[in-house]
Image 1 (cartoon, rainbow, N blue to C red):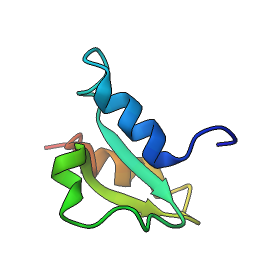
Image 2 (cartoon, rainbow, N blue to C red):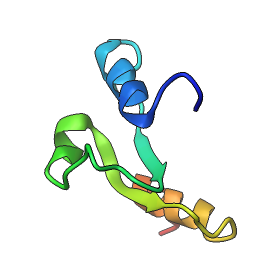
Image 3 (cartoon, rainbow, N blue to C red):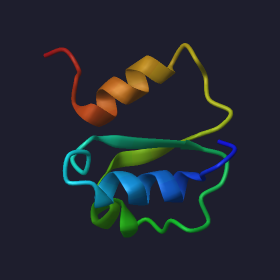
Length: 71
């Protein structure tokens, strides 16, 4: 993202009452600003998916993180 990094986007989402409950999954090469204990505090849904990621597996990973799996 040319004008904002992931942390800035996440802070903006969490600061807006209309957007603060949007599920967030990070796709990132590097997140040095984020510690594992921050997931709940920042409202991140479960995990960071590392880049490069497998495009074929990505939909299944997202569905599993958000609990959209078939029962």
